[in-house]
Length: 179
Image (cartoon, rainbow, N blue to C red; front, side, top):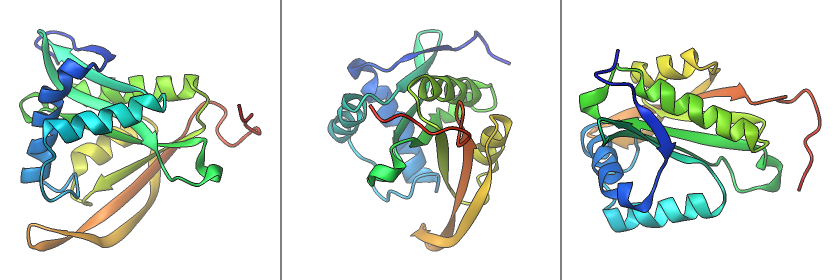
């Protein structure tokens, strides 16, 4: 499946130019992201620092020393009742698709979020036709939670927003403890 197996590790500041390049591709060539203009490395650095400062996991996949994908968890919604729910983001370099890198990243993210005490992970997927992401999430235990038809408008067309979700750890079977 791999030329060499990916190494999944915590992202570092020096990874951000490669992360930005991967993300930029999806902004400018697809509808996985609803952003219209790709953020520059400075903006990606600001976002990385905001995510990691709150203690959320942020990982990269490396193959042969090159960053081939990234994934992170972040706040699902700002209200306190959502404190135990996270949203995932997973992006893989177009040159490394279909090699299990997205799955390795998402599984690492699920494990880290479970260890951190989160109880639910939500995926917000751009476009109902984004079968790669939908299949990846299903393979990692996510179930369909709904579709918002025509939630975005990009590249001259309406684009759906797909919602998927999965429990983490004990999920909703016990009362979580606030720290």
